[in-house]
Image 1 (cartoon, rainbow, N blue to C red):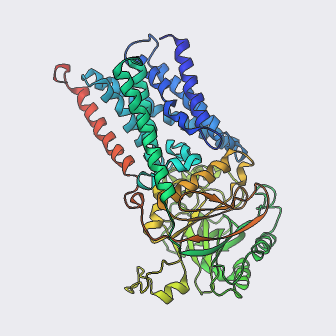
Image 2 (image 1 turned 180 degrees about the horizontal axis):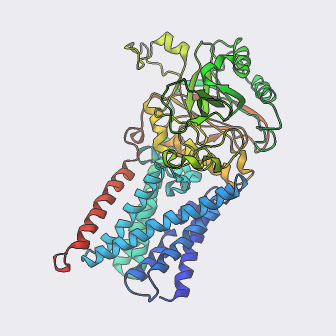
Image 3 (image 1 turned 135 degrees about the horizontal axis):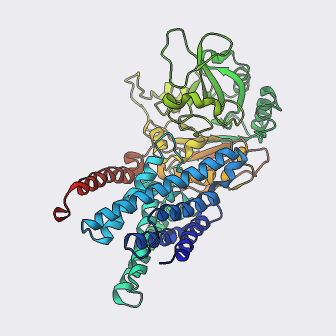
Length: 559
């Protein structure tokens, strides 16, 4: 195979990936996106090219660079440096996975493994990569293959069993089958026609199953009345500099007043809606909290869920977290958080700290090692540097309902005395909504609803906020939970348990919407088992690596 053809195939693969990605792409192109790249790899592993093997890494990097650039270029609106690192870094990691597959395949072929089996290792390695990309400190699962079908959600209703990694597995299997068909060149032979029919069935059957699930799924009526506010405060010129915290809060409350009445259960404000310096050691003394308490008084059952930038002062002798900061002008340490608060007419404010943070913006990866680099963190206004997190997924409970119905909790043996589903909310903050298994932790802790609070205005009017919105609908399908989504800017909306987006607000316009959404207490298979596909592949990768290492030291006659 000539170098010209190698480069052509690399470009072709990258272009197909780019054309497949939401919000404007056609995701079913992903079923052939890897095929040109697999043809390149086959040329190197079978000796069909005289080019040096290191060129394979460069060619795969070109493919993944095109894909990343086309899909996430919009990050530059928030940070040019962040966009460069995201595109170049993620393409490098993807290329490294493909390179490791190539080296492993070569070793397995030397050991006389059959070619289809050796190629199947690619599926295991890629799914392991996606599984790990959700979990390590450099996480960036934005381009998980299964995410691409968010714009065709009626075709992937079976994500309630597999999660998005099921979609990735679907894509990878079809790519290998198409590659095998093209490699053997048996289009007109009976074997080729059978393979083509098998490919068609593997694509069509999941879509048919999904359609049956979608049109037969009926939500149980357990309504909660929710008002969602989109204040549309410019994150660059107003939110952290141009408008003071009182003006911003007044704007949100004025919007809420348009829809709130005695039947309203929740009002939802966006991420970092409260920009006053709020110290968790003394929440009730905060002017913003006092104002919200006054707003709540005429509505006994109303609860406000809002984002805030908060801080916590460490007492003398208290154990410090790895993200603790020292005061510049005085002794002492504190932590900063991106926080969700639930404020109601009880005397308790419920608090949750965002725990899936954006690398380079909200945290420095591996802060125990690289914490000294915090001063280089990208500042998007508000609080920069490594933020604090928490281990558990806190859910927000209705304090009055808990008292009336006797909800069991960690500190009590009281049983639930009613069959009614309780008002328990998963407070999901921005980037966290991209992490499927992470969201299931809220559901296992009792969440019957999901509220997503976000600020997508950093990215301007680009595909970024649209992709973020679409990914959220996958969480509704995986968990079968209704979602109320409040964006400072971007799109606020409701999403039902089938993933349908309802009442979307317009871009860059203030808005307030109201709906009755249904609670659900049932746990899907995915909620119960999580990313089982990725977990199996991760452990299988370890076994394969160990096997290859053993082969490396065995005499060829014993392999």
